Image (tube, rainbow, N blue to C red; front, side, top):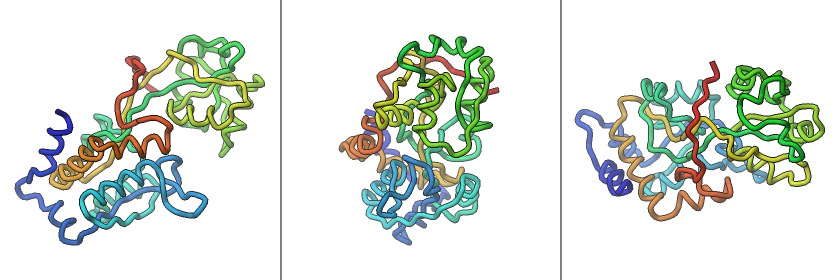
Amino acid sequence: MAGLVFAACGNKQVDGDNSWKKVEEKQELTVATSGTLFPSSYYNDENKLVGYDVDVAKAVAKQLDLKINFKEYNVDGQVTAVNRGEADFAANDFGLSKERSKKFALSSPIKHSFDSMIVRKSDDSGIHSLEDLKGKKAAGEPNTSYMKIAEKYGAKAVTYDNATNDQYLTDVANGRTDVILNDYYLQKMSVAALPDIPVKILEDVYFNANFTGFLFDKDNQALKAKINGALATLKKDGTLEKISKQYFGTDVSVKPEQEVSEKVSAE
């Protein structure tokens, strides 16, 4: 039913809104992205722009029989490009939050996720809940929401600058740090890529269920509806699942099996 509803929305015309007509006339989608955010938007070993969000955007363009042109900016630049009409939408693992919906039109979700913690295999780093973070050493980059959550629960921040995944995981394993808070699927990829380091994702301690998608100018409802229609088709025919498994090893285009009800603010 969801697919049918979205597909219907894809054909809906919004009075006085020619955002889709402009794209249709030029036969090209212009998409703002970063090119630096693995695995959403990055350059592979062949120096080709790829990633989950990038490949989904390419699939949308193909579904709508359009060419696609990517413009690379930092996050602020992507937002500005959408607001100024320099890009039709932004694709860079953007959270579809209620707060963001006040300023932008949001696509239907293309990725569902939640937050989790990496701990030592031997003793779970003595952590069985968020409350157990008190007195623990939490690893991460400074000023991120993950570190703010850890500190809110009483953890001591151990900050890194552009460190590799193996350094992060090794430090947890050897006791230099105790825990890493981050996105579940990114953590799953890191642990799977480095199986010899004795760490794991702490089971059943999940929080902050979230979903991501594309950002549009608030007024471009016709364009948003057309993109949502294409996304519904790609979900129904298995394209989103195929792209998901390529980058995450599982289908992130649907809600996860894990029950995630706890919400934790970084403030």
